[in-house]
Image 1 (cartoon, rainbow, N blue to C red):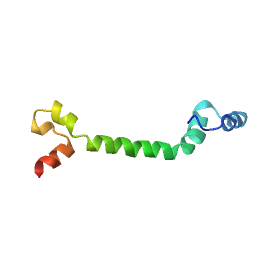
Image 2 (image 1 turned 60 degrees about the vertical axis):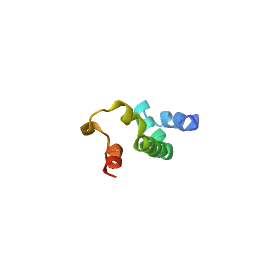
Image 3 (image 1 turned 90 degrees about the vertical axis):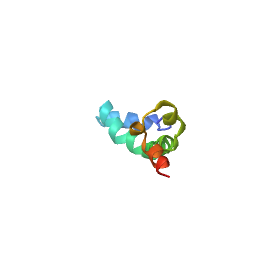
Length: 73
């Protein structure tokens, strides 16, 4: 979001937008690609994480989905 030009924010303020409306109408739409990629990478990182649940969880009923699927094999 630091790459969005300040001129866009300033022109929105001149048009009468408040801080929240500037965020919702300008910053979020221009950052959708970055937010989407971050969501995909975070999902993949948590999906693939096998070691942390294996270390902390003792009971089989508390296993996460990836661990449970691995145990089915």
